[in-house]
Image (cartoon, each protein chain N blue to C red):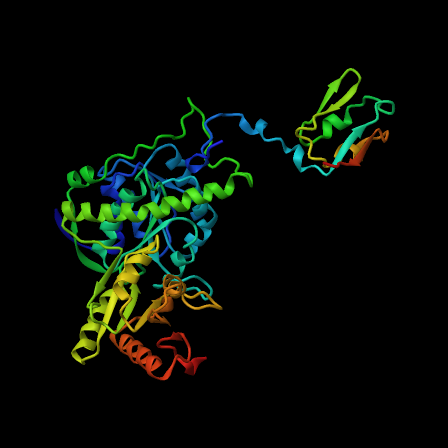
Length: 392
Length: 86
């Protein structure tokens, strides 16, 4: 193991390098640009064997990734924001063809207005494309989750692509201490990818062939079943990772939730701030807890119900927005509880869009607002935090 | 037929098994008495469904989608489109 002080993009690039991908088609985009740059550098320096394909767009990057993965190669790429939006149609094809491509993402807002800063809209908007989704709180998680994503996605019970999100700038461009595992350990943890069927000119086959109405629904069902199956595979991989590398991962990680009246649900880098805020609220005698969600697809509903069912309120924080509804995570959480006879009040807070900082005071405001909603009734289940109404 | 993971088809050339003729609502019918065997219909059929036979053009109804291009282009009105009832 080597201890390094590196930026988040370097962490995901090193994570990818340790997985020995054969092909890396990538098109640089802020804030993920450093990822392809670093991969390029590793290959040029002879530290890495893979082939980097310099494509003309993100759509081509994902197309090349799909083609390469179908030949049985291990493939990874990186993107963000508009780049992922441009990949959209190809993301469905990757998952439909059951190709375990892994993509590192620097989570960034979408235009317009143009904005390069942190926001989860880019990957949240891709929640229906059939990719597994992981969100890192810190750079160490970015590196670890890249390795874990390959392990989980390539499992024969899964065979689906996955994306690992690290928050734009807050992680992508922030230097942190990261333990970089030894190559030998990663090689043992992640054996070579050996699909049963792959493209080979000697024995021609077709991937993703024509699916008429008689078959299409069954293909989608099988894909959904694989996503469900991944829940078990994720737990197994997390357990093995802890054994080999010593770091603990859970689909959701509760913090001081046992006796909490209010739990705050977070994704990504805001989770650390949430824990600090919970500690302060606890000192003030307020029974707050928080839950960090690391796996967003498949949605860890059972685990979430388990740790939050005794709370009075779940405050769901969304760094994304589904206009006309609220936060996407809010709708997901509400769906888990809706058929239970008794469940916590579920409130939604939209915050941190387009790189606005999420600070301790925001969590205090969320606590107070939620408390008020409990006592005086819910005025509006979807509230915007830190909104400057003066400039509206 | 069982589905495969990733919709993989390992038998090349299987598109022939998919008979697109079921898409048809109008069916081209050739009047061989009017036909002058100019073969324009054969040239223009986008599906390659018309073949040359001694007695005149022959339509493969397994794949003909009933687009009507043959009937539209026939200079001698030798092809008419009939409503097909199934």
